Image 1 (cartoon, helix red, strand yellow):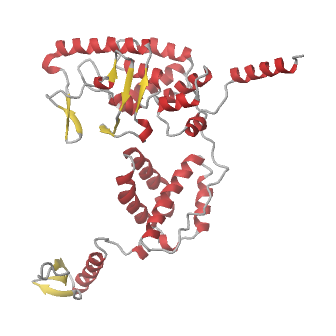
Image 2 (spheres, rainbow, N blue to C red):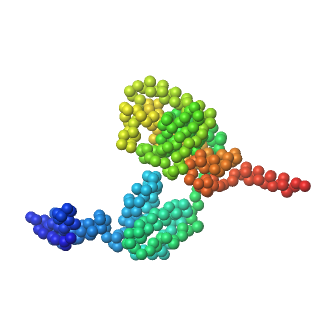
Length: 385
């Protein structure tokens, strides 16, 4: 391959270099429009370097940490993890990593810089958040290490501080909370069915809103969880274990049967004005084909959107005068099951956790009633003759 050359064409300058021959023919690469010869030569040198690196358009040794993290997000996270994971990683990188460290040359940064970085974050954020931020940085530096851009990963031996901001204590609903909420919402509300599904199953909000009637076996009382909705698009589930079948009892089955009949009536009443959906090129769109039949929808057929359901949950939080979002169902459902004596394995399968440890980590608290029961039990043991 030849060196980069620059020549004047009219009033502008052009760079040119020769690539590898294809079928014996030389391939020329050029670009014009530069004001000076120096500008053309500089741009040509960058383009030539990028060509030699098979399309990598930056000089690794001079790349900022922000660029390295972006490279990791685009080349690994976006293609290998779920969209939810990508959104979380991108949000944390944009709001926490880049504003503090993004402008520095990643190849010159040492362990002590990151130790201070995490110690500062620990004052305001939970250990869980810090662990994810470390995953992002570690992943970015591992890519640089694999590409031989650096000799070692400075983040690999950095420990996340133990003394971090404590996570907010989860506050599950009581049966009384649920009864008050359902009475306030009412059976005629668009939100009645999704709220009932959340209470009786502990499903994620995206899983609930993605349910179609072919996912629900009303005769056997089984819900097949196969997909979720993220940002108005149907997506794969969070993990492999999230794909699951869960049994539902007579109460929820009857609620869903009544909803099915109600929707069929609405279809007849609205006729062509009833909103119908179909999947086209991997996306669910409003369509006359009517092949995607959502369980959670409004009277006119419109599918319930996540933002709308979360808005209703916020109104219910005000009504109940306690923290509440749809995700609280995911904490409440297993909490009540475990308190009633269900096994951790059964709860794990029902919620779609990848391991029993995940279930135990999230729901390891013991209620006051259980503590009292344990005390009474030991009192009996202590006084036995």
